Structures are given as C-alpha cells and as structure tokens.
Amino acid sequence: MGRSLIILGLLIAGLGLLMTLGLPIGRLPGDITIRRGNFTFYFPLVTSIVASIVLTLIMMFFSRR
Image (cartoon, rainbow, N blue to C red; front, side, top):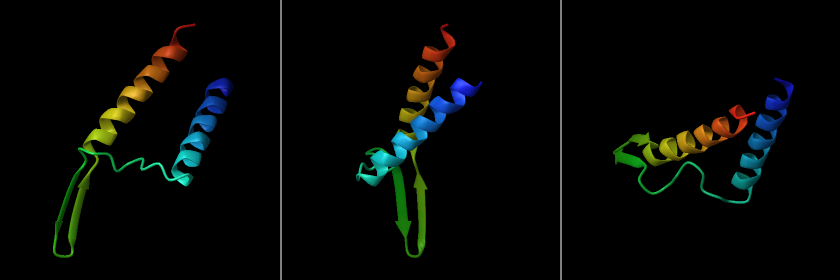
C-alpha cells in the first residue's frame, strides 16, 4: 500500500510539472466544447479515453507481481 501511494504521488507530481511547462493536458483535439452566449459546455471525451488507457496500463503493470 505504501509503495502504491509513493508511485501515485510521483505520477501526480510529474503531471503537475508537465502542466507547469505548458503541456495542454485536458484540452486535446476531439474534446467537445460548445459556446453559446454566456453558456459554455465542455466534455473532455478524448482526454477521458487517454486517461483511461494510461491508468489501465499502469494498473496492469503493477498487478503483475
């Protein structure tokens, strides 16, 4: 459990570093944005798919002991 928390913390820190350097995480092509007047609807479709794939691969890697 402790090892998993350390790795999760490092992943979050790495993601924060990438965002600080200007990588547009969360605004990928294929995400749906609708703007009408003073209303904005944002649905991160591609971002959700990419995050799901990455998390699945990470979990598969750590579950194979």
